[in-house]
Image (cartoon, rainbow, N blue to C red):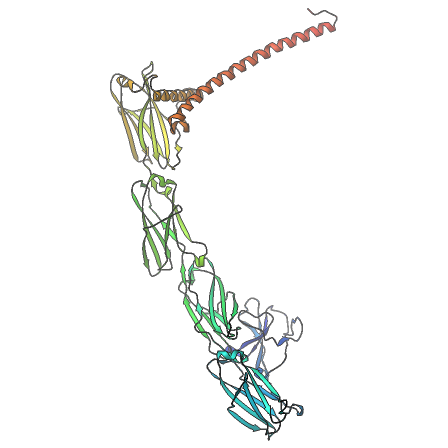
Length: 586
């Protein structure tokens, strides 16, 4: 090379154009191997990339090329040398008389085909040779003399078999040194090639954006350094690796692994794995890539009341035979109806809604690639469920001295939390208190509204109207009059006492905080979840009142004692001052 630039690898090849085979380089690319007899002539070359070949053989005869590549594109040659021819001949000297030399074919021979081996002996024409395959003698096909009677040549023809991988051929001279015959050995594994059948490529169902390893398995081959190429219209640029497993008969199973990230444009692409040896027709296997998109779930487009049935659809593109699994929470749900077409799969599931579904999620899943992560999609029931409130009016106290009774409206089991409350007395609106909604364990909400009504002898209709989500009205009505005052006792009923305690507690808090103005107030949880807790609330309220009164008393007593102690202190100071001046304090 005239320069170190551009930076990139240098590779030596035997042969030209598409028939060339890799001979030597610093770092062979995937599928290529260095000849172990070759080294760089100069250690750590930068511009001089000459090579040295040790132990040359007759089948090394050929044309060799030095090719330069760039680091930016290691597949396309940047420049190439003119090539150099190397011819290897067998020569004999006087000292080599009678020494047999076996030569074989220049390239590997496929199992099942015939191969020829030649044994040549330099010496008199009357020299004869014997052939042995392992320990069994083989009859030669041809014997002749050439070179003016100075050499003898013998040829045998064999049909290559898998068992020959471990066989050794011997050519032994006879006639010159019968007591210690000279011989040469030839290992058939050096010229035999066992090609695989059609390469087996796994055909997985890939998932978009997954990182995958595709495998091409080549069984029963020899030798193991087979050249593997992955293509789909052009040379595949992603890296691939190979590993081999040897069998008892000497053959190998080689697995080539191709790593890549699944893209949208790979759907329907034909991926080919091609394998072969120099001089032999390669074999190949092809699969069509199936690329599945992650599942997509769809539900109702508007809110649906509990008790009604809704439909969910889950769709996965790219594969007409994808299995789809439905889950509600962590529980598998059966009953999905599967539909397929040429480029995808869809499943439909019907579910009847109930109020407990507010906190639930619905999932759909498709199988992952080779046991990896499971692609799924989910939908929250809370995005479309509609739970209508239940409305109940209860009288909380009898008429006081001003003929005023209190009523509260219990609004329960609704979702979402979007309500408005209006009280009507004979169709006329009343001022009321709406307390802040409370979320219950099942995910729905509960709220309360309180109203004070002037009660007369005339029977009137009191109605609590709840508007949910701005357009759905739910109501409850009761008739009120002084004649209905027996509905709530003044002290005989435990329930009445509890409501009266609650009413007084709220009224007290309203007066203290806003001085008589109406506000939205939070209802204590203990009122909602049982009478016993409500009684504890009342007891706690009375206890807190007593505690407040005691604290107030202590505060006043502390002030009084501070004042008394202050007076005593000043009196003592006055006495000390008088004594200091010589007066007797009185």
